Image (cartoon, rainbow, N blue to C red; front, side, top):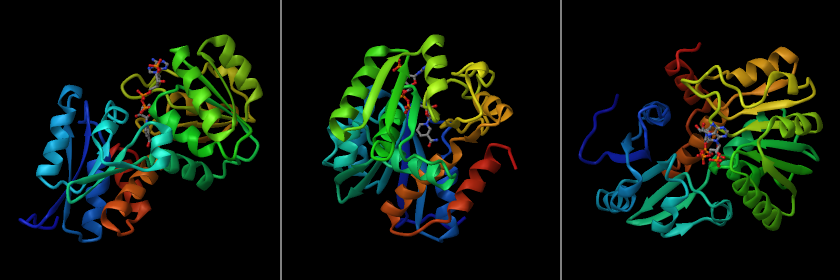
Length: 286
Ligand code: NAP
């Protein structure tokens, strides 16, 4: 590990809780590999302290910040410049500090779409079912809207999925539909969709025996993408694999969104495979 000096530039991630974040291990490995004079830290910031934290970033000249749950939407009011795509999405996950001027982007959507393309998921004219309608669903649906034929959102809070479907349709023109998550709707839309994307936390560690979609509703023609990366293979993905579906876990999206942030902050290109293997090793899977 390179020596930290008085000149070392600071990057970091903010969220609450934050101790399970994979970002420090992933970014510090890339920093060390490229022998850059940066260090990447994790900051546990409670929602009521968000505005104070922003002042600290400016005061301490922290160069780049990743933003995770629950701050991706709330942080927007404190920033100086938000790129138009992130503005449309309504959430940011990456901030760059240019001498106290805070610019923000959303790399989740681009990272997620890139993962689908890299894993041979055909998007053109497909019907896509999203489970969940939170920040990640907003970002990813916005990015794939230009390719696909229709996007359906099923969520616990029906109003939230309806609002997302309406905004996405107005801003991109893609055909949308939204409703509450129920066995009736899951069965109906799994049978008529091409791609299923889980953006809810169902199945995430430690509740790894849970799945958002009962196995009997899946069919072998579906491409199933679970954006959860801990565990790397969720119950949903195991069930989908058993049935013969093509599947993708959340690790590639995590790496791709981190890769895009790293390039923006440092203007250097990290090794994607190194970042990927580091997270895999950290999660204890070869
Ligand atoms: P978020 O904004 O809090 O949204 C979570 C969504 O899941 C909401 O729509 C919520 O429904 C729904 N939900 C929550 N608990 C649920 C439950 N028990 N049953 C059904 N639905 C439930 O969070 P997010 O930022 O979108 O992140 C969601 C997940 O994606 C997390 O597991 C996160 O770790 C993962 N993620 C992965 C990556 C990656 O790079 N791989 C990137 C971003 C996020 P309501 O609206 O009704 O509350």
